[in-house]
Image 1 (cartoon, one colour):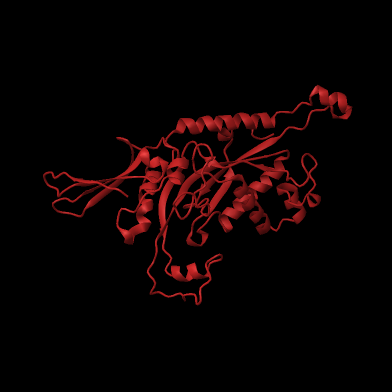
Image 2: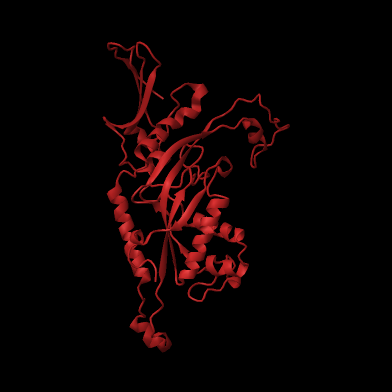
Amino acid sequence: MADRQRGAGHEGSAEKTVTLGPAHGPLGRVVHLRHEEVTPEKGATQATTTLRMGKKTVGGDANALLVLRRLSFEATGGHKKKWQAHRPLHEWATVSQVGQHDKALLQQVMERRRALLEHWCAPRAIPRSVQRRFPGSAAPSPRGCVLRLVLTCEWRLVTGLGLQFGVLDSGMALHGTYGWPVISASTLKGLAATGARLDEASPERVRELLGDPRPQKAPSPTGPRGRGGVVFLDALPDTLTGLKVHSDTITPHQQPYYTDTMPGAAPAEEPRPPGEHHAPVPVPFLSVSGRLCVDLLGTDPADLDTVGQWLDLAGGEVGGGGRTTAGYGYFTCKPAPAKKAGKGKRS
């Protein structure tokens, strides 16, 4: 990385060093890294690292899809600290909260979701053209119903750890348009299936509510064969509290052993055995804490209540996401209060 340094001494401090380094790739023409170090007359050196676009600091209005998945920098601490190349990205994520400062935008998105849910709950009339072709279908289809749950992290939650986007060793599940941290609908459905097993629910009941990849084993009376009776939407940050983003680190102590024995690794004549003499290798990752809104759609309120109980059971017993053995991923999933659920949520 082509850096340039400039000194600017001032009273009470040692020389101030500013290092400017562009990002790799096309974005390097507009985004660069600014690293400043100040050594007071008495005290330890203080360093700050910021992302810059021209003369402006990249703030919380930037989209995390670009910052976390499209930017790459060299390490600023020498070849022995290559893992520290993540620091400017993680510092931006924790300070900006991955774009959640724009509460108005989040509220607008949740308002559009509310309109969708109200439309889902309304009786759906049969078009006249269909009534003429199929006289028996003149009656409107039954109303849908919606259950809103509040997912509250007991501590921290790691979502999308294996996505491996950008230069980070571990990814983070982000909204495909706005870049907010989310829990995908497929993840919620998998957690519900785990809760169903913990609840010892019958296979027929599980297939009835969650569906089955084999259509012949999970007939659906109202939709495509194989589809379950409950529809999951992506969990979005709660509009009141949002999610707090944390920069965490896990430190494997036997990385050579894991590298030699992991699936897909190049065959070695003799894998290096695990040992405490191996140098620890810090692996950074991002986690979140706070609350998310989970919306379940269906035609039977009892079905939605059952799936909500499965989610709560899975969150308390096995957790979701990664690092559950280290205490991450545990949560509660309770129905939202009526005043927060909005009109038309249950019917």
